[in-house]
Structures are given as structure tokens and as C-alpha cells.
Image (cartoon, rainbow, N blue to C red):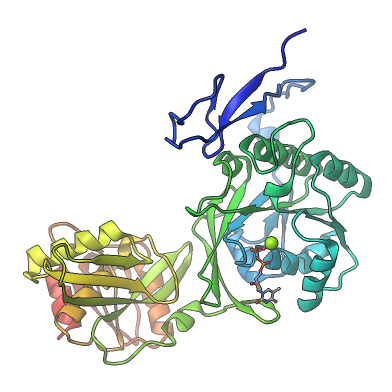
Length: 446
Ligand code: TYD
Ligand code: MG
């Protein structure tokens, strides 16, 4: 009889080794290896038959609304049957709340099996009452063993399954603790097979680590079809749901919510919201347009530049890339001659949003220039464009969509890259195309 094989696996990245190791050679984590039973994946598996692509009929009507418009758009227009959606986010951000609210729409498909490994049925009931959800189609299952969940699912034949959360579920076939890499991978994979076989949507809630990644393995993100992250900070009622992976739709699509007494409320016009508390005639504030998925979003970028009392001046970037800010500071210094080297510089995106798009470069540069010169930018002006190292302003994608959103919110003037001008027509607004940062700053601070 062969010896049962055991493997040592890194709990932070999933690297496996036959011996115990003190330091993971892959992710360099210390003391992260634990012993796990190796299960052969090939036991009793049937091989698939090859099929010609032309013989496959893809049904397009497979999407179903969750009843929450913002969640539907983040998913790419509703949830696809047979797909697995992972929702990650900090504790208390609202993962359980959004799932429970979407159950109202999903219950139209049939029975919803809500597996709650974290909260008792009474706790879920209390939350459901608060959210005014009374559907009889929701079946609560306070179970944490994978085998138990699968047998209940076979018995009651649900049309939607929700797992809250994957870190609490464990398989009896594996000896390691719930939440370990082996357990999470095994449970997620088995649940995925169940969902695919039955053609029903499966929602998995996952915790995130201190670093902000979904706890446990990256492998979990590979197993599922769609990964949504819930962002936002505790002091702020706004929550952003962002699709970081989507096999059935565009990524980077976002949904914006506000956490209220009675649950999450959709925000229909986020641009208006992000600009609602904008001060007038204050230096260091610029409005720029970022594109999140297919949606243009007007955001205010603030900068504060002040002489530093430190040997190495302080640079802080909230919501934008730190290295990008340093790059823009260097460009302003070298190309326009702004003496920023001895200055503390703080940059912030208002509303707790984080933006990774280079199209907001000109917004950051404009805010820094405005604060440095202590000169306010007119509130009716917006700007966007990617800044190159030689100070040139580069064209960005979908300029028309961005300008359209600014027009909708009543902006009167836009400073945009010159190369974006030819592709766009819009009335009611004065658009100026500029070639470099110097011209743009001059136009902003005329
Ligand atoms: P929850 O969905 O439990 O978070 P997660 O599952 O991501 O850990 O959300 C809990 C927080 O949301 C909690 O701090 C209370 C708040 N909340 C409201 O403000 N209004 C509500 O209607 C609900 C249900 C929760
Ligand atoms: Mg929860």
C-alpha cells in the first residue's frame, strides 16, 4: 500500500514542497509552510470528448439580473448562469449585505441556498429584516463542511448558491485547517464543479489580508470566473465595487454605492457625488475625468505643496500611484522650472477613490502647479491627458465620452491633449487642445 503523500505548502502563495521549508523560495514569506494531504485529482475522472467550435451553441440569454443595477453593470450586465463570482473586501465593508440584497432579485430564478459559515441563521435573519427582505425562496444553511453543503445542494436543488465565506468552509478529505491554501483551493474547486454542472450562479465571499489581497491563495482568483473587490474606507459611506477579473464582461467596471441605515443604496450619478463638496477658489484643486471600465467619472484631485522642514521632503499620494506623482513632480521641475525639490507634496483623490489610469496625469500636475503657485483654478474647467517624460501631453482613449460627461455636469471649458481634438464634436463647451504640460498649466492658471 502506498504511503499517503503529504506536501508542505506555503500559506501565502500556495508554493508546495516535499520538505518543510523555513522560507518560501517563491514569495519569500517566513515560516509559512504547513503540512497538507495531497489528494489525487485524477481519481475516477472521465475524459472529455473533443467538439468542433461550430457545433457548440452558445446561449446568449444566460444572464440574469441581481435586482441591483450597479452590481449588474459590474458583472457586465447581470450574472451568468453557471458562473462563479468571488467578492472580496475588508471585514465590515458590506460583502454580506450586498449579497443578501441581491438575493431579492436572484430569488426570481428559484431557490437560493445561502450557506452561512460566519453568522448564525438568527443573525442573518436580523440583517434580512433590516434590509426588508422577506422572500421565502431563501434557504439558510449554517454549515461549514463542504461535503454537507454539496449533499444539501443535491437534495434541495437550488438555483443560486451563496457561500459566506470560503475561509470558513472545510473539506473532510483534507486534514489541514479551514482557511488554509489546500482547503480553500479544494473547496472552491469542488463548489465550482457543482455550479458548472448544474448551470447555476455561485457567489463566494472571500476575506482579504492586511495587504488587501484575497486571503489565502491567488489560486482562488484563478478558479473563479469573476473577481469583484469591494473598496472604500470606514470613515466614508461610499463603497466602490470593482471588477478586477471577468470572463464574461469588461474588467475595471465599477459600481458605486452608499452604505445607509437600510443597506447599500446605488449611486446613480457618481460624478456629481464626488464633486459635491468641492471648494471654490481654493488653490490646489482640479477636476479631471477618469474612465472606469465603460463609465466616465469626474473626480477632484487635490494637492498641497508647502516648503519642507525635512532633509528629504515628504511625498504622499492617496488614491493615485506614488511613483506617478514623483514622475510628474520631476517633469514640472525640469520642463517648467517649478522648484519643487525642497517642497513637501501631498496629493489626494477626493471621495476615497483610487485611480490607476495615466489619463489623470494632467489633473495631478495641474493640482500641484496650482498649489505651488497658490493660484486657484476656475471651477468650470476640467482637464485630462497623459504626461510624458519630455513634458508632452499625450492623447487618451475615449476623449469624447469623457468630455460628454463633463458637459453633462455643466463644465464650460476643457484643456485636453491636442491629438484628442480631431475625434470629437461637442457643442456647449469650449475645448482647447494643448501640446505639452507647460501650455496646459498656463491655460489652467491664466
Ligand atoms: P457586512 O455586510 O456584515 O460586512 P462584511 O460581510 O463585508 O464583513 O456589513 C457590516 C457593516 O455594514 C456594519 O458595520 C454595519 C453596516 N450596515 C449598515 O450600515 N446598514 C445596513 O443596513 C447593514 C445591513 C449594515
Ligand atoms: Mg460578512
